[in-house]
Length: 316
Image: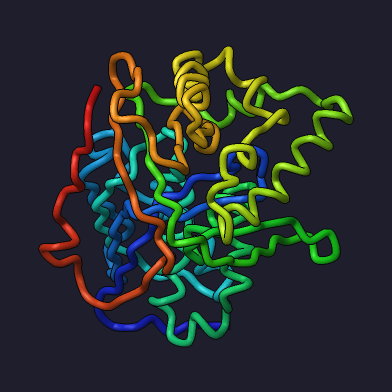
């Protein structure tokens, strides 16, 4: 089956995400108002990626860039590869900090490829796009909120072998704050710290808090503090990122609904932090809105506003 590629560039804006949210390990995620902007167009000169902002000078600039790899996988599902693609990225999501930078790249690639193929969004519908993005990432809890926006519950479908998700509207009173460290983290190392099994009591405790968190995030923010307690994964990862664990303890000790963002090392607070948190050295505090739209596709190259840098936030 052949494909027809559209003329001219397409672009997408993809949000940062925070997964797990405490007890919702590999299932719950939230889209945040911090974005990467990516544009792409078909060429006859192979694959080339231009990166500005986060990751510039570090990330690959050819077909091995994650956006390019996700595009190639999507083109394959759609029935054919172009001779080449030019990609320009303006990255604001910090790399390897637990804010979904890899998921944003994957979702951007999937969406750009769908937009570059005539009838691509029909041939590969939204549900299939989510399943492909989750397959490429390995789990759905970041790609789902990146694609759909808002607060998302994601799961694997044992019947189809794929992934599914539902989007819920977060309560407007929820105002996330992220504490971003200078140091990076690795998801693979964080996962390696998890035990093969946990006590039944801890699993039951965490399941109850995850259920409560759905209610707290959508209707009762006053319950966010108890709803974000976790015994499933954060404690096991603490030794590998002691500064993150210490900040979570510091904030929760002061009544803040604080959790590790994804695999860390960023800390997410879902209730207002104190004016004088004891951050230590090398942390940046950024207050963010919840992105309720998710990945947004448009046409054309990136404009001036899309190339603007992100606000720096407060440093310790």
